[in-house]
Image (cartoon, rainbow over all chains, first blue to last red):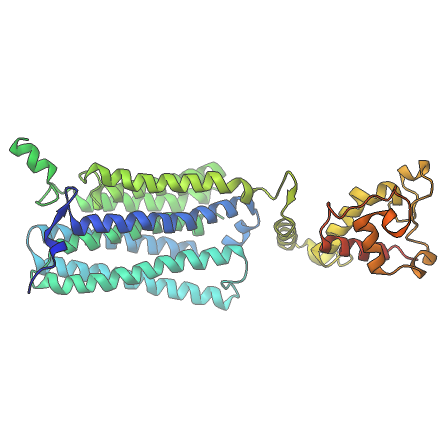
Length: 190
Length: 229
């Protein structure tokens, strides 16, 4: 199978694939940043939002933070294995990372079901709008990351395209960092 | 460029030194525990430092050790920092208008009413005061009346405000049923909007069409009718 030119080429001192990932992340910073900055300014202007935030489950948020931090560890260990040429181990670790993503989404589903049953929905008030929008957009990124990771791990297990293991890892760490900020903003500040 | 420099500059192609990832993960977990426990003390300063200060440290550790930004090309770091700077710019430009609910020549009535309603509900005050006007418009009409009209028309709309003493003719008495026999809501709204001369009355009744919007004028007219005896 012939490799795409982009995979074999370097640009600005970086492999094009990695340059592209950084480019994606730069735009993601503005997407999530814009959302979070809007949330912060509304939150500071609305003293009553603290009361709404007290309905979020800190322990579920903390557990999910632990899950994502751990999945970042397996993603970076997959990158290490890929660099050493061990595609099988890299694929295994990427699938483990996916399992972390699935756990994260499972906890999120339980949390949201509980909150929706209590009557807190997207249109309840400004706080819940931001809550579902920010966490929802983040969850979509988790889902996208998992799909890409499964594709990359399929190639990696055959020892192919190992450089992609690092690329999906960088994206996954970024999604982890977004959650690192979402957690105190939506769960801790009450 | 020497071979050594060349290798360092192109670290992206080859294997690089890996930090002890498990140790980094351990530090991140300890920081997570601190960020959850900090707010339990209930001290606001501690909450802010442990929740948000630690988030920044955690993000730094992940970016440095897991994303390898410390050995990445410098321009990548600058690219990402530029994006973050844009976010600060957004906050600096927009936050003053969002965080404050009034300023010179503007007022965010909806936001103020929502805060008041939510805080009252949270403290259980709303249930105890059924006599309060139900809609935010009605409550702001009372405020508008007090701050603009009461000076002449009096607190109870009887045309005997402090400024009325020196006025000829006297301001309208909204408590007088006879006043309402010849006037409907549209007429009252017109006078508020365009002033006394618009209906052939005293110029001492100034026009307020520039100060209040149509909704506020309508609410004020409704409010005036509540004075009728």
